[in-house]
Length: 294
Ligand code: TA6
Image 1: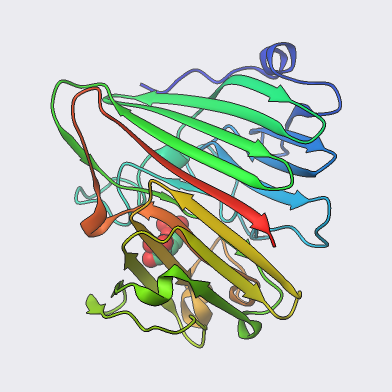
Image 2: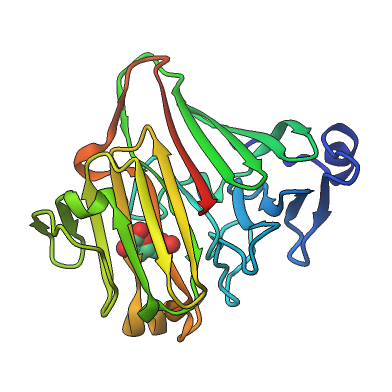
């Protein structure tokens, strides 16, 4: 069961906040929310509860990358921003089911909104048996996204989640990833091989698709081209995915520009593969990430 879409009138009447939060129709017909306060601004679609834009007031560039080739349609995932991968990560065991699950294709409803001079918060929800999903987002000088899944069945369920964040960068040759990931082993999704901790910063010189296993509370994305560092702080996450499609895969993706691999890197706050979640009946699991400009 997919929730009925809220109308623009309903959203504007119940959840819009003057000078802080408004709703509009994207040219695709999808509904988009725009948040703005003294500390920053952002945008999100109800389609997939998909955050597509975040820029702190003191930043000269957005923190999130959006592909210029992204599709915007009810049956398509948006390319860029923060797609929510749930209840499975990657390809499904069942043919015909969408990659990365149904949450990023679902229709979400706004449940509440709030604003101060320094932040705008929005809570969205969706329900697809047997899962109830809640998503708390706060735009301010930082961006916080908190995903909670509840098992509404009477049996134990296993699931995976990834907040599949696309970071905007100045140039892929000038970025490096530092912090907790340097000390963690990873699964190379391209070869299926496990690798021990590299004990050095991650740099990108080829297609990279890794699932780091273990808690990585703080990760630093250092961008020497745009002379900035993005701090990624997570809670409730026991795996992190690092991805760049590089040249050949970029050319194979219809909703991604051939050169766009130079302008993005994904660092995904996850519970996937060996770190998947086991939920008891009525059990809850929360995965949270905060993006800050250092
Ligand atoms: O998170 C990395 C990954 O699983 C890659 O393997 C790549 O496929 C990427 O996600 C994008 O997946 P998508 O289904 O959005 O094309």
